[in-house]
Amino acid sequence: MSNSPFSLLILLLLYTISASAHPPQDYDVPFTSSPGDIIYTLKVPTLEETNLDNLLSFGYYQKSCQQFESILHKKVIEWIQKDHTLAASLLRLHFHDCSVRGCDASILLNHDGSERTSQVSKTLRGFEVIDDIKAELEKNCPKTVSCADILTAATRDATVKLGGLYWAVPYGRKDGLVSIAKEAEMVPMGHENITYLVEFLQSKGLNVLDLVVLSGAHTIGRASCGSIQDRLYNYQGTGKPDPSIDPNYLNFLQRKCRWASEVVDLDATTPRAFDPVYYINLKKKKGLLSTDQLLYSDPRTSPIVSALASAPYIFKHQFAVSMAKLGNIEVLTGQDEGEIRTNCNFVNAY
Image (cartoon, rainbow, N blue to C red; front, side, top):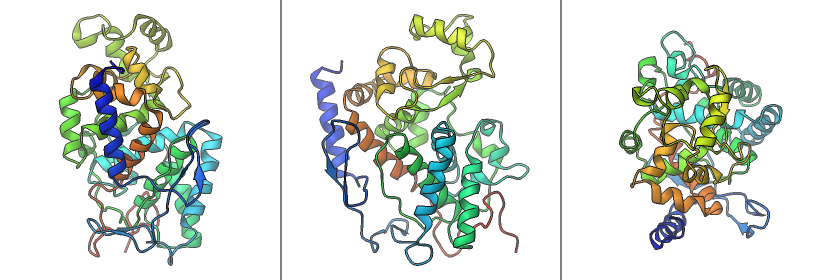
């Protein structure tokens, strides 16, 4: 399928979309995304450049906290060097945050009945990374940098650390004041059908391309064996495994997941590398979650899967573009919207 004229057309379309969209931007220095890649020079936006749709700005902290990105970057690297799995955890934490009430750090609030206490949030990790960054920033720039901006930028730096491309993050998000556990239940958990996923992302201003590309975050990270028990032993109530799983992969998973509390890599081949092998795995029927594997069987998404599987740079580039879109969902920027929390776990006490 990847060599068919239709798939090649999709590949060309992806490249065109990526080139015409707001591209990921790095400091004005050459870099290579992986050995043997072409060297690109990307331009950092001017400090005056502003997103007029939501009033976020690339130069938002230039005067109030010049150390922001250097402090954040240093902390992210320290944490991931100690535990590389935190990169994927931050990606997931950011997605859960932006999926409920937009990117407002509502997932970080830790009180009875908050999103963080929901059953679907029980396996979220990375809170301590954000707390550490926030504490350091409060020493240097008190009451200045929002938790929402910290989570968005930390996710970017964590992705880059594992091999993703850098993208410029505009700042100025306020932290939300409301966090409700029930609302967290709408976040996709790996059991939904493609129609639900498409409609869910469309409600957030994202499209089918973003769905397939952002699912590529599963090229790193792990899932609990409990989340795939039905696929392994009782698919759709049949008492049998999901027939769409490769037999050898199924055998491996059944041995690996004897206990629901165990964890398993989302990418069966290169779990520590941020690469498009995730999509190659789907073509081999080695998608861990049912939502992963369905991307290759659904006609709306399968051509994109095939195209991305054969185009490492386009995947990384488009991932950066889609992540930039994700980070801008329903942000709070107005004078009467949200606040700058001094502790990411709690709203400010006045």
